[in-house]
Length: 220
Image (cartoon, rainbow, N blue to C red):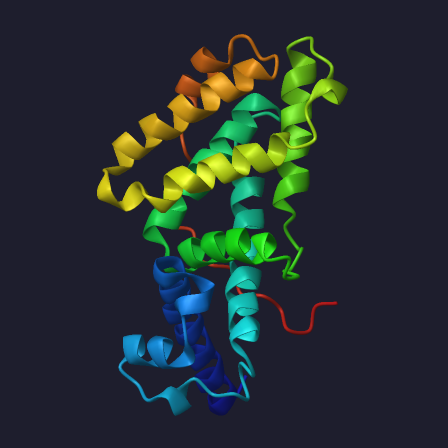
């Protein structure tokens, strides 16, 4: 990779990080190229329409990069499939979204864009992953996964996002307590009778030394 390409990739990465912070703070509608450039201390022209021809393209880049990270985090979880793995993933990604601007931006963007029926990247399918692990958890507890309501996954993710949206005013420890207090009764209502005790034992993955994987532009 020559210096010109390296400089372009570095610039692109810096823009995505700055955009992630703005999307996470202000949401999709209120974030503009001007706001992203101002946060970087640069003129609007520095964003470069050759890199991101539209705000949706910029939002998509934030989501795509974070989906690589979510996939990496999920694969690193030591818990066995089922309730503990699901809880660990929800906890890890919720805490990560508080400290990582790209994670925070992608989390809010997915919530807002899906609500607005705008197509988003699907490399990491949150709904499919959560549904799979929840069905395993219910089955392991002697229940029938087919009895889960159709809106179960949407309810779990929406409730989790709702707590995350107002989490910056509390400590990480308090946020974790609130998340577990939310999840345990939900899991129990879906037939996992010992959910509270099992959820309480779950710890988040340490993400402090896990870098954002860089998407391969040549990947199919």
